[in-house]
Length: 415
Ligand SMILES: *[C@@H]1O[C@H](CO)[C@@H](O)[C@H](O)[C@H]1NC(C)=O
Ligand SMILES: *[C@@H]1O[C@H](CO)[C@@H](O)[C@H](O)[C@H]1NC(C)=O
Ligand SMILES: *[C@@H]1O[C@H](CO)[C@@H](O)[C@H](O)[C@H]1NC(C)=O
Image 1 (cartoon, rainbow, N blue to C red):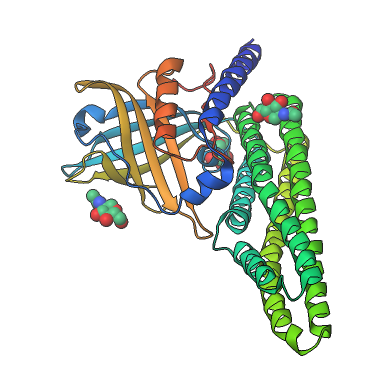
Image 2 (tube, rainbow, N blue to C red):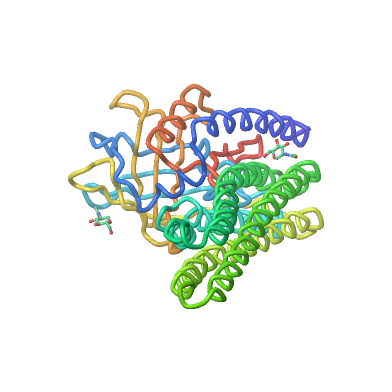
């Protein structure tokens, strides 16, 4: 009886969630342009009039960004948090509680899929910076090739025309890549959405249908990477054509030597750029293979299911000047920022909150997380969507590995 109810809830959860996801995706821009715009953590406007005393008490986590939920909270359902008055002024104590109900091996797989999704998005970002940044090796190399072509047009017209053909091929292949990465990022989002359902499905329940959704999205993502690879191959072949033109210029004797050397240099820069693309394609392919293995493992997982409440303690300190900005330290994780971006309700009783955290990533860009908290176990869709849209309007990352996913609460949640 309980099991059936839980499954019905999951079905309901799944569809509301996908609906929200689509709304979210529509307001986001192209993957390359959004990810490249995120260079360092932004200074977002916070609710500085927040009254910490009013903010304390119990909150239910309605949902959060998938990169956080599926990694740090893999296997957790019914997440909630209790804030209480700390020892000092401007300090609160934090107790995070989750109900773990997945198999131990599945918890590792969910976290692994999330980690690999993150790697895919980071590698895709690196490709973006080759194909979309004007000052990348690839783009700079191509512009040098064009410049040389116009310099030699009069003296070496046939070489100039071969250069033009090759450079156009490289350019149009490079231009194809960013829309392909945008599609790839959307499949990664879908992988993470389905992964969050795997994460929150009871360990003893059948997960084959949802694992199938994870896997079919991995296949689509893999196809997309192959398509990026075919654009790479076009660039690689055209780069060889440039080298051949350089040889032909060289053979034409003394006058051709100068242009030959210049073209070789420019083509070498192009090669460095496209080699970087190739390296990233290999990394994405490997990460997607890892996600596939992890998804397959979920189906075979016979490890134990614990029904444990997991508690993590910590504390948070309010910034004396900007009250909506707190620093939080929880369990063993490094200190991070905890910013209150919005609250709903009167100053005497906040009933929902939008919370944000951000850290810079070593390989470039930033890792942003949002949570929606509510005083009640359910939050109406309108309030939830208004918070999600607020996050989008502030430019907060919700694409690729970071779509917003809802937290599951079932009748098994401890009271
Ligand atoms: C991809 O995953 C989503 C859920 O995240 C699902 O709705 C969709 O059907 C999946 N795509 C395929 C082709 O299975
Ligand atoms: C869950 O509880 C069981 C039994 O009390 C314990 O052995 C196990 O270590 C716990 N697991 C986790 C992940 O906390
Ligand atoms: C929070 O952390 C930042 C960065 O480490 C620091 O500049 C700031 O003073 C801290 N604020 C509080 C209230 O501890």
